[in-house]
Image 1 (tube, rainbow, N blue to C red):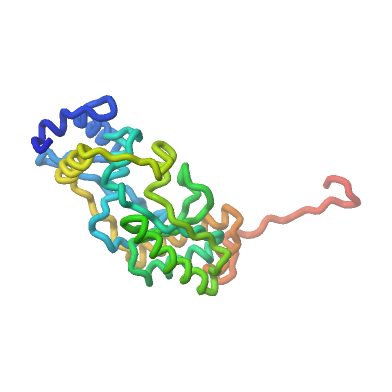
Image 2: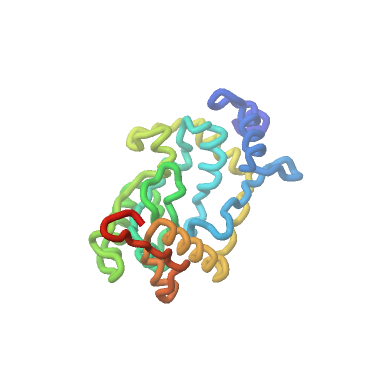
Length: 254
């Protein structure tokens, strides 16, 4: 397994690792570098659905989900590198609550992302905030910190849902339930060998311009989905003029 050729010829989920990496290149999930290794490109657009802060250099979600799960394991196996990943998820119901959670995320020590769940195929709801932990006990401890902060926040409160989940919802849909995941020693070796040859292109920094573009995207999504709390962030001005309503006369259609 330590030999590079042996890694590439290993058959996983019905095809060789080399074939899977070629499929990832064809899909745009990887690009080939001049030295024969690969790069996982940043695919987060501007504006993004998400605001993120990474405070844990050991997390390589784009590799494990974007390369291992989607292409090498072909959605048949959860990556071993995700075995200890747990998240505290908060489910805001309005843009007002989402922005409040972004502010909480910036004040907390956890790696987090918050933004739009509405386009994710396996997530329910419009908005989401996720705080990332290693291990269920760490997640349970963080849950209480997050729960208390949400309860105490003037724009959030006890009515906002907070819970602990394991890893990505995609894993649970294809390989769940998550309390029955199993991992093999060869996965650890394979993933380490490939990660050593796949460079992760850095995401752009959350500078003011990028955050403002994302915030504008959130406002437009809130308007489109009927969440009038977007008015908090436009000075009370509607994003577009209201349509004229024509009421029927004497109960008859106009």
